[in-house]
Image 1 (tube, rainbow, N blue to C red):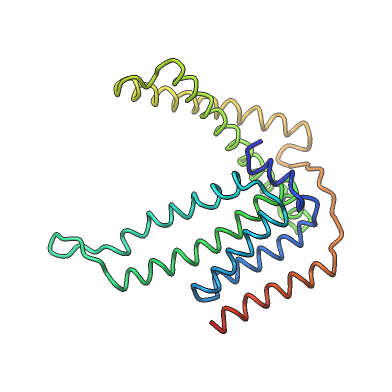
Image 2 (tube, rainbow, N blue to C red):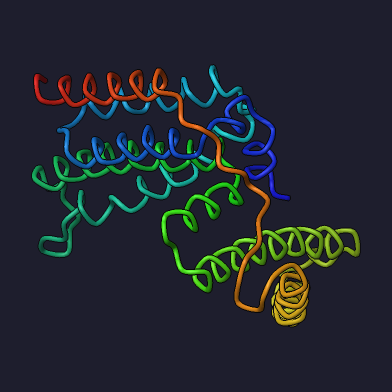
Length: 242
């Protein structure tokens, strides 16, 4: 299991009903798309961080890098919005700066909602909730298989890289290029082999093309739903006022 899946399975919110977490973070996601920056988005980020680090007790060493990685990617992608090429010289576009910071603010808030949901809710619970809501079985099977395969490939890639480092595969530039090529070839072969193995293993748990998960439906608490509603209304009102 990858660190995010481990954190999702071993936090204080892992036993809460999936519907409540979907209501909270789905509502915050909609709010992130609708409320104007920056106050509303800062509040959404603060709520997500408090839910993950304080209430659910997700390890900071897992949550913070998972949140910062897409944010850094967003910041790197704002270059074409900020800089403009005029007479073969790069100049700052004021309109582009405004668009860039608004885009980063909105996308960061939306990303925080999805990352917090992923760190507090196991994939099995999400798939079970989707199946109860009418998600087709073959689609749930594809999602589950793809998710598990990605986790296995990440672990395999990390192991291969460590093995090549121990064999001094990066001692020179030429050796490093050869090492990277060998790793890509090995991962491709392992991807095909392990994808077939995962499909065979999952077909033994259910009909081929179906996914069987042990995730019982938990009753929703009216009190928690009311608190979630108050939080969402407050965020929306704050966004409108500011």
